Length: 145
Image 1 (cartoon, rainbow, N blue to C red):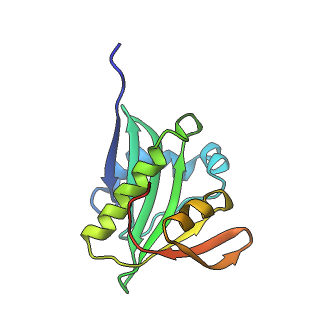
Image 2: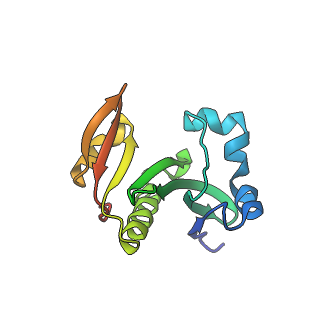
């Protein structure tokens, strides 16, 4: 049996709403996923998503965008438990960072959970403020090592 390959797609509901929600809709609608992710994900005009797919199954995603001031933002992210620590999230972040670089974005903000703050700090992100245990961190686009 041939090895399945993970593919990554850049998606935006603004471009094809039916396709986007056909792939991602269950993550917005089903309580099962909201519980696993830990919060209700959302979408907004202009928000883009890097979606990791194994055949037709979503195994991870990360959303991002640029505000009206040209500042980049990393929003929702999730990888199914089976594929955590297998470079799926790293690849999603690298694709997001490359998009920011390619589009001239020089400042990025992210709300970072405690278990990722050290990794983001290692990439030059600095915590500007906290909300509970979550850090609002600011940095520049760079390769996620």
